[in-house]
Length: 214
Image 1 (tube, rainbow, N blue to C red):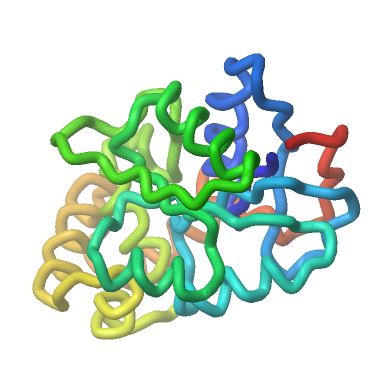
Image 2 (image 1 turned 180 degrees about the vertical axis):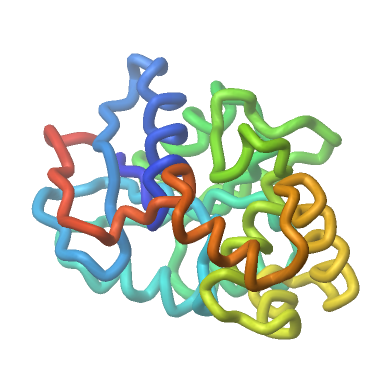
């Protein structure tokens, strides 16, 4: 399998977490929009920081001849989002509220040809080995994601549509992020995001996908 996202920190954390499972052979990453150079049986698409509709990004991944199946990995579990992902051709939808063994098991089931909707029905914390930009500064995953989208130029309404949340919720997350980062407004926050190494995107160059993997 290969981890899919545009942010180095996100992809590295996901790949490292799943490498602990000996049943999985994990490639480092796929960056959406860059060519895939080796066969990938399962592309595990972490939705952190996506700016386009989920259907578009799934379709783009599946258009790659070397990508066999796509599984969405997300903290967003609204039925409309899950249905949109599966309708776009995803073979699975995995919650970040699952444990590492549960995530690995879901990936293996997809690799075996099953369709999986592995949704957490209990309130559980995000797997501790996962990472995201700004975590070291105290940002929650949601605050980080909202901040990233704001820094990429999306309006509050556009962020809300992308994340299936209301605009007032977007504002609350932004203000919380500003407080934690000790910035006064969107302009200062955007400048901080663009100069911070933890928010570095993988699109700065092409990456080797590593050895053949499920």
